[in-house]
Picture 1 (cartoon, each protein chain N blue to C red):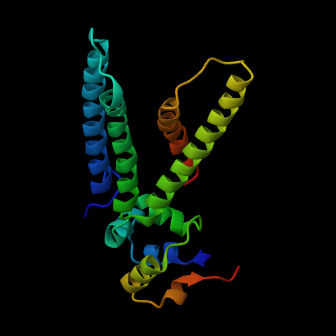
Picture 2 (picture 1 turned 120 degrees about the vertical axis):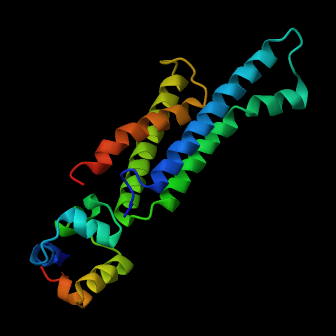
Picture 3 (picture 1 turned 135 degrees about the vertical axis):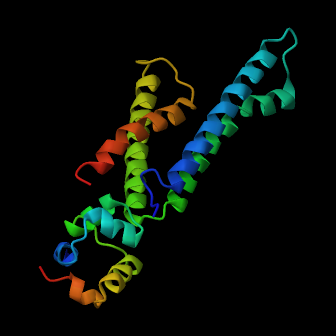
Length: 64
Length: 135
């Protein structure tokens, strides 16, 4: 799955560590999600969406 | 805000449980060896029960690993732990199976079954970098 996490994070001037702290996950997890090596669970995807105040589908896309 | 790892509450609890289990293991093993070295070693049901005692702290380590998976709140880290355990299990069972046939055809000496547990712990060490490679 593709996602716009890196862009959204950059817009807010957050480092991977900043985002990790806000989501209460490890920086390694943020990195894995950003680079598309790991698709988060629905609960984590919703937490991410809530943090950025966007709908889940505005952040994650299943189109290649 | 603290998240795991590094070193997270789940990892800290695991390290504590591992240390406690290994301390109990050393104490129990030494005690049981001494009992069986006495001029009149235990026999019958007592001997059977005593002989199983050193196994329980080792089973405690399996339990500590299970708790580590349950208590790790970071889902990606949890996935990496599960991958690591699956790699260790696959390697251990493969080596044990090969060893069993080698032993069966008289090519290697007999190895007690508990060496499978020790091998599994060693393979967890091998599985750690493999599971996290490019993670």
